[in-house]
Amino acid sequence: MMNGARLVELTERKRQILKVVIEDYIRTAEPVGSKAIAAEMGGSVSSATIRNELSDLTEQGYLEQPHTSAGRMPSPKGYRLYVNELMEEQRLSLAETEHIRQSLQLKMEELDRFLGQAGRAVSALMRYPAYVSAARKGGVTARRFELLPVDENSCIAVLMTSDSRVKSQLLRMQLKVPPDQLPDLVSLLNSHFTGVSLQEMSQRLMSVSDQIGPQLFLLLSQVVAYGADVLEEAGQREIFTAGASRLLKLPEFRDADKAHELMSFLADSKENLPMPENRQMEILIGPENVSDALKDASVVVASYDIGENMRGLIGVVGPTRMDYAAVAARLSSFAEGLTRLFEKKELLPKEERE
View: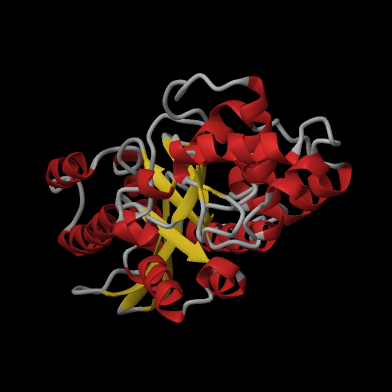
C-alpha cells in the first residue's frame, strides 16, 4: 500500500488538522473551513490557530484553496501523506464481510465470464468503476482435449486450457474419420499435446506423423492448429471493466467533458490502466498515474493468485477524494476471497475438481 518514503516532518497538530480536512472532504466533497475543523477537534485548538496551520499546509503543498474565502481541500501530495502515514487501517463489519463472501459465490467454467462478473461485483460494492485482469506469469498450455462426433464429415473440438478456459469449435474434416477412431485420437492428443508450449506442440506433431494414418493425421493437424490459436489468444492479458457510468454520480465528474474523457479511457484504452507488478496493494493518487486521463483520479489495485502460474489484478478508479481506508480494506478482502476460490478450484468444471 505504501508508495514512497515519508514526505516531510510535520508537527503533530498539523498532522491532526490535515487528517481532519482529508476525511471531512472525503465525506462531503466540499472544502473544509476552520470552524468545522475546530468542532471536529473538540475545541482543543482555536479557529485562529487552525487558520494559521491551514495556511502553512497550503504553502507546503498539502492543501489547496479553490477560492480566497473558501475552505481547504486536499492536494495529491496531501492524499499521499495521508495514505502513507495518517490513514487508519479499517476493519470490515461482519455484514460487509458476508456481503463480499456472497458476491464471490461464482462457480464458472470459463475464466473470462468469471472475471467479468467479479468486476461488476467489485464496482457495485465500491460504487466506483472497477477493472479486473488475468496476467499470465508464464505460457498457457492445453490441459485436456475432447473430440465430439457430429457426422461423418465433422466433429467438435473441445479444449480446456491450463487457466480453466473451455473453448470449442466445429471442425470440417478434410478426409472422413470413423467416429469409433476419435477416442484413440483424443488419447494421442492428451498424452502428447497437453502441458507443452506452442513450439513443442508443432515439434510433436511432426514426431507422431508416422504413427497414424493420413485421415487421422489430417484431423490431428486441424485440432493442434485450433489449439495453437486458442493458446496464443489465451496468452494475451485479459482486462474487463465495469461500472464506468458510476462516474456520473460523483461531484468531481459533473462536468460532462471530464466524465466523458475518463469513461472513454476505461472503454477504449483499458490496456493502459495501472498493472503494478509484485505488489499486494498499490494506491496511485492523481498525477502519480502515468495516463493523462487518470491525472484527476485515483486508482487502488490489489493482486490475487489464480494458480496454474497465473496472477490476477483487481482495481477501482475513483476521485482523489475516495475513502482510501475503506476501499483498500474492501478490495483486499475481495482479492483474498478470489485467491481462496482459485485455491479450492471452485472455478473448474466438476470433473476437474474431483
